Image (cartoon, rainbow, N blue to C red; front, top):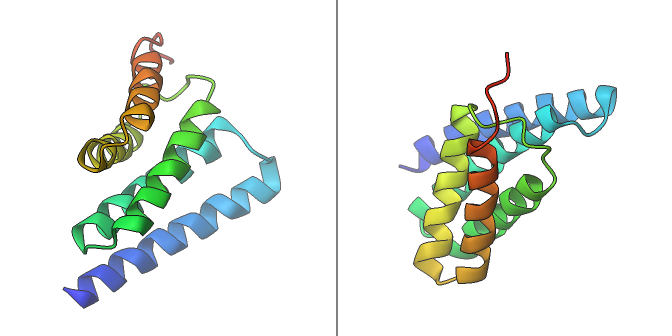
Length: 117
């Protein structure tokens, strides 16, 4: 189980490095925010699964913060929606009702956006 955890964390680290490189080139955009949502949401899920609850909650808070700053351009980004779902579960299990409600409102806003393309 440790090797699976380490492999996934290495993968997420390399994904984060690519996002950071794009951030350095293009600045903060919805694209970089969505990518960071995916990375932090996945980390939150993994930390939760291995019992690192404070770290999971910290990653969920990063997702919530990033979601607030999106311009609503990600409603059909499935990995980001799954990452947000993981964080909703964490907030529900930890009793953080205000954070849960806030993230649910962001999710509702994303899902009400018109299809882009």
